[in-house]
Amino acid sequence: KWDNELLEIFKIPLNILPEVKDNIFEFGATSKNITEKTIPINAMIGDQQSAAIGQNCFNPGDIKATFGTGCFILANTGKKPLKSKNKLLSTIAYKINNTTSYALEGSIFTSGSTMKWLRDELEIIQNINDSEYLAASIKDNNGVYFVPAFAGLGAPHWNQQAQGTLFGLTRGSTDAHIARAAIESIAFQTMDVLKAMEADAGIAVKELRVDGGATINNMLMQFQSDVLNTTTVRPKVVETTAMGAAFLAGLAVGYWESPEEIQDIWQIDTTFTPSHSRATIEQQIKGWYKAIEALEYWTKINK
Image (tube, rainbow, N blue to C red):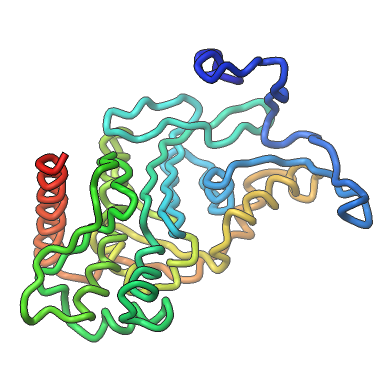
């Protein structure tokens, strides 16, 4: 339902707003001015919630991460809302057949757009895919860390004053080290959100389902698995937001009878499992935390 407190703050009369319905409902139909035939609209779902449905995150503990311009992580928490103690958002995942499922959500502002920065501003790559090849030309980041806070830091840090910062540059640092640090920064930020989710839910993440354009980067996906020390699963269809909306519409008209039937459609493309030395990964994670701490201090003294 609409939140009365927010309506009062923004001075919005309740009677001008549409009635809140389930995600599956007969909302109406398309106009013949737009489509030759009238097409019924039987589903409505938000962006990240739709991606979660497209990833078949129907059970408590199921988690998906959408790697687009930013990175948005949603964890199904079941039939009761879970109030976060670690700076995450509590949200509705979906409401089907008058039953509501809730989720924890964490938003990372800068993810795939980091690769565009390498291409468009630094001009060290010609296309997005080159970032992986460039980063793979060296064995490690050689102590270089990049915090891509171009629009501040999102969950769980929530620092709007933070700015993008490179740490650990030496005379031996190259464009490959910067590219590698940029790729690794995406996985580190995702790790921060997942650790907060684990703390809130009191469970360990057993599997992370990933989607979005940046998931074609195998180095990123493997490093994500390494820093989380868990399995990362990329489906055959990575445009899961569109799939989620289609699944709901199909359920609405009886094309599929139940969410269980949809689960047979979802197929795995690649599964990434931890493969690097844990001691090495832990050392890199410590370096990331030092970079975050240094950036927080820089932000504090430059207010």
